[in-house]
Length: 266
Ligand code: NAD
Image (cartoon, rainbow, N blue to C red; front, side, top):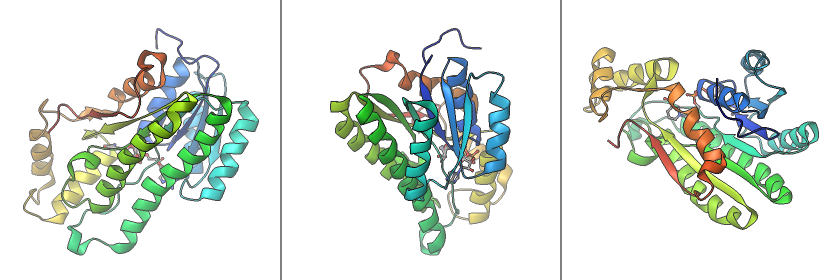
């Protein structure tokens, strides 16, 4: 349980709020007094997440929405403002990892899907919510990028490209919105585990069968951890503290920054 109450009276929207990082961050924000709007494409998981938050949070509501659908995003953001009266904090976090294939074999439809969710979806949310924040005269935004958007890992063309672009978008949004008292930053988690995304990437990097990784998932896990200066993967629970720092007045002179959560730059 947090010792501080930095977000009392603030409304926070978390996209991908039913997922691991979204939920952990929503919980941290709720523990510090925020009212929570959870958005996700997965209605069932989103309701479960809201139920788990209801004991912690004064108000939690769910918004089922595909972030890549700009009309649906506009409608849902308007609904959030109608329900809560304001929208102060945004964790722009919904994402999809996509396929693991070398670029000459990379599936075209998967490339389009990943870009639609991770980049166009993030833009749709950023555009709608920042409109509300401009009218309000302030707010704080954190985008979830990835170390894949910094170092271009093998076999992850779509995901890496989408997150590189999101880091660029963070820089532009920070400049465009600074005159309105809105800060925009990004986080870039690296290898996080244990759990679904860790197991999935270890398995799929092995199956990709390229010179960079073994075809044995156990060895792939060792290779990945061996590339991290701290020699371990990160825990999902090492993310929310960074996001809440970036959303609080503790970081009041920080905007346009991308913070790696990576166990040391590889
Ligand atoms: P997760 O799969 O647990 O959560 C992602 C959530 O996004 C899911 O609940 C999913 O339903 C939702 N989502 C997917 N497509 C959507 C859409 N079109 N509209 C609305 N919601 C949608 O994964 P996570 O690890 O919690 O990932 C959260 C973010 O962190 C993602 O942007 C991901 O790329 C990023 N990230 C994760 C890791 C990691 O290792 N877990 C590392 C770096 C970056």
